[in-house]
Image (tube, rainbow, N blue to C red; front, side, top):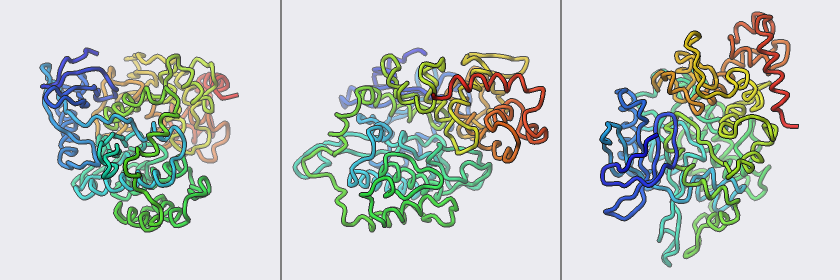
Amino acid sequence: METPRAAGRHTIVRLLGSGGFATVWLGHDPELDAPVAVKILGEHWTHRADVRERFVREARLLRRADSPRLVQVFDIGELPDGRPYFVMTYADRGTLEDRLAGGPLPLNEALRIAREIILGVGELHGLGVVHRDLKPSNVLLRAAPGDAGASGGEGERVLIADLGIARTDDRLSSLTLPAGSPGYMAPEQAQIDGAPDRRADVYGLGALTYHLLTGEPPRTPPVPPSGLNPAVPPRVDAAVLRALEPDRERRWPSAEEFGAALADATSSVDTDPLPGAPPAAVARRTRLPRRRTAVAGAALAAAVAMGGAAWAVAGMGGDGSAADDAHSRYLRAGSDVPRPYRDLIVRAGTWCDMPGLSPALIAAMLKAESGFDPHLSDPAKDEYGIARWTPKILVFWQPGGLNNPEPRPAQITPELSIPAMGRYLCFWGKDLKGVPGDPALNLAVSYRSSSKTVVKEGGVPARFMPYAEKVRRYLADYRPR
């Protein structure tokens, strides 16, 4: 990847993150003497008019919002080689995902951040925009001198980012495909033509608030937040659980109503930062492991860069040992699963609650499919990349589905193809209920053939036994001891 020297008047300093469709760079505005983030469309997509339009559309939506609660766009243009770019807010305190890595936040801080996120999403809805991918890595944190009170202490702003798979009112009734992030997306977002509307974002807000209060995303079905954090008031439990209703008809009908219910339930809790004092989380950040603060800037930019088309790979220590510890509950420590793909594998393997699905299974399948080779190319079978996807099939399961163009073989990166495995298995795996045999192997063979084939044969067909045996062997190697 060639490093651009500048984007308009903005000097490029270094790469912050990259995704399937774009890269984000730390830039410097010489006229304002201030850091900025510069998002540049990937060179492979420069000549695709539809992709360029989607890229520019995201910038226009953010600029149209023009809100202090959303990432702001300051400029847009083209590099000399024709790649479009836009210049946006640089969030110097990382992502909410980084913040939550230290565990649940103090109650007042958790509610303060939740309130700001809800208000920001409400502003999006007021513009006719549904975000569809609310999650901690898409919430950025930025120092805001003077925001803490009259004494001039340093405050903090909460910014919503990444409108890469957002939809506007005029497109909500058109065909939709599975899109979103596990743990935070509403049930209807996992369905083909689930037609997610504003209530899908209400679910996402409920999941984010739950995570803020408890230190972990909700499970299915969720226990009340107070079951994990006794400091949570009962009325907050009720407000959050209603936001997480699987039936959208029973959820809060809007972000505003959820926010009002949460505010009413917490009227006795001080959610304002103390005048002249930094937020509690700023002090907490100094107690986080060094690796977390080191990757914060890169992680926040990667989240913006992905545009719903890739996952950030974060949490890597200098030698990968810290990341190994983080993944050890899912993947056996010391195995040959490549470190750069472990976060992607864990996300794909925990995409949903499905018998047999696990990060160890995803790793075993990748080993069987390609030996973890991200550059695999098999034109005779029309299969490419680490997960051996056929482009015309991957287009349905890539982030954003048919809202994004069919990828070319060279564009089928691990960031694009590994999460798609989780989507695929979670959707078709429902057909395997009651099929005899090992649920994990039934899932694996469904990926190699189809769920219809496995159901018809009543388990793994004889012709796929060698593949199933290979997956079984690798699965034993990758499961945690």
